[in-house]
Each structure stands twice: as C-alpha cells, then as structure tokens.
Image 1 (cartoon, helix red, strand yellow):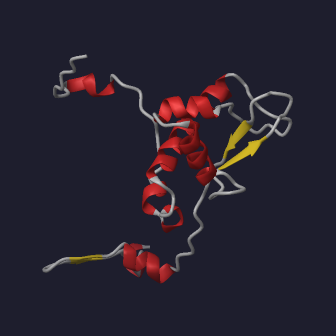
Image 2 (tube, helix red, strand yellow; image 1 turned 180 degrees about the vertical axis):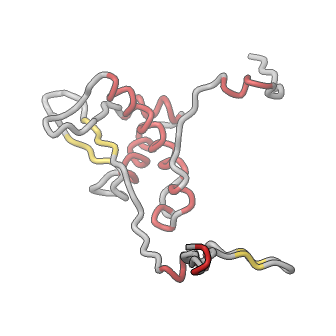
Length: 157
C-alpha cells in the first residue's frame, strides 16, 4: 500500500473521527503510573460507551455498560490477548486504578464493563487561588482586583 502524507487545508481537519482521552490522565499525579496504552484504551472504552448509550444498554440501576471482548481490544490496540488483558487490568477496579469495573455474566456470555467517570478533589485555599491568578513579569504585576462598593457623595443623592 502506498500512503501519501499531505497538509490539512481549511475544513479538512474535521474529516476524521477521534478518540477523546481526558487530559487529566496525562497531567495528574494520580494517573502517572498508568501506561500510555491503558490511557488510550480508556479513551476507546469511552467511545464505545457512547454507542452503548445510543443502544440503551443500561442495567437495573440505570448505569451504562459496554461489551468489549479481549479479542476486540486486541484488534483495536494491535496487540495480543495477553497484553490486552494486562492493559485492561491496569484500568480495572480489582487489580488496577479503578477506571473500569468488570461484571461476569457467566454461561458463556461476555463480561460487561462499566466505564467509570472520575473527578479529582483538590482543596485550594483562597490565598492559593489568588496566587495562582496573579502573573508576574519583569515590568508588570497583575492580580485579581478587590471589588468594593462605590460610595455616593451626599451631593449626588
């Protein structure tokens, strides 16, 4: 196969569909131990979840689930089943970080996977917030302005 690489022009940049991967997976300390493959797989699982939502794949508690076998993961990720299992375990709530939870259905049925949402709780004091919103340069110092009430003079009343 002969592939030609060319520049994007105008609206051509929108011609592909993309997997969305949360930036926090790459920037937050909580996820530093997670491999790049696991982060990419999480993005793929999020993409599959949107398909599950369209198909109304909801459990009794109204939680969205996906069905994504090891063979399917291997095909999408371009690796063998052992590596796919290892990557999935990095995300799993029992053996990994907890971004997914697998549930066995048994009787030859594929496992279902709950892809979990996450939030990072960070407590920031008011002073830290003010400091983070200030920018210092050689000649300038910008900061949050304290807003005060404007007082009316008696002559204006």
